[in-house]
Image (cartoon, rainbow, N blue to C red; front, side, top):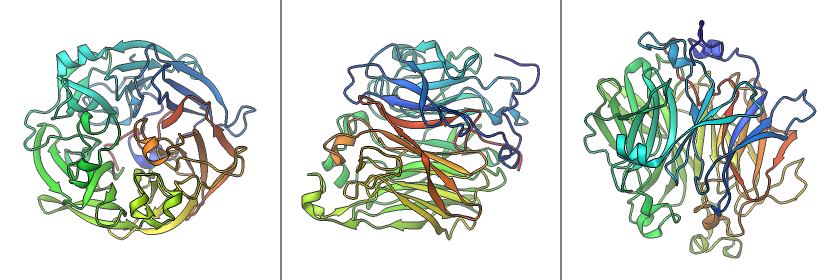
Length: 464
């Protein structure tokens, strides 16, 4: 829907976005791991002055089963204010929600009642296959030229995965984004440096290597994703590949600096085959090429094999399993989810090549099962997973489920879902909000969080 003036939730720069009004609602992907009842987008009250604070106050239920809702995004965002954006008057109104397993795409209207969103269009897998030849939809970003959606495989479930575009207004599938993909085959996350006309993509695997859980032979054969790909954003052409090497597997979440003049960002590597550690790498511009440097290494924690799931008993250790990261709007603090050990760690990344730990909390974890001040059910399972930061950087929200088929490999008893919030001190340091704990309804597990009006992984900017 077009408006006479740019949407008030759009900001030219991250500095201005950090002064946005506080969010009052969060939208959370909620899926059934047994694939017997429909998934949903849950609406959580995050307004501390509300009587229903920390409660699910609405939801929109999907029309089918077995979607496995995953990473979703807005139809429009601050990138619509870029000089080359042909549509500055698009309204931030619709959530674009993909099913990773079903390859179905849902368009959800959050207005006129943000607590009771409604589905206005469902794009079936056959239409996406016909027009873009992709399936297994994963991540959505609004960009200056439309809505970008990536997919982990082609329509037949094989490599290559890639990206396709949707029209902002009609939500029609426009087609495959890549003009020249070079050596890129595997896909996972994607994002960009708008100020440097560069897209970055990462890698996971093809559906036969993750839809029934991680395959040990593939993992220890170093055949999951381990590369970054750099692209000319406007020519849609592959420029450079960086291989992290056989030791490093599952190079996942990408978080570029929000300031468009900065040419660096961070990516998490889930596991090292050498010692089960996890790591964070910084990519940065060096002359006319991109380079990477490992800047954080998080070791595995020794553990009694009796306390470990079968997949880890021989290793006698809990891997951190860094499965998500997020960067504050001022590019100062990086948050790292350690889904295995149960840690959420805050780093000061003011110097992106030399981060310093500034805060840490523990909740859940394969062995520790750390609890929360407001949890009524004692020891918690699952661990910090999808993390989202408010635009002012003062609040951090996260959930505890990774992926339906992988959850039981590390938490065999099943995951009881929860969502928590952290308060952030001005100069670093994090602590639990003792009044915010969402004990997720049984039968569903929570995944990605999107905040009303935008958050630190929803928008990109063209002005510093």
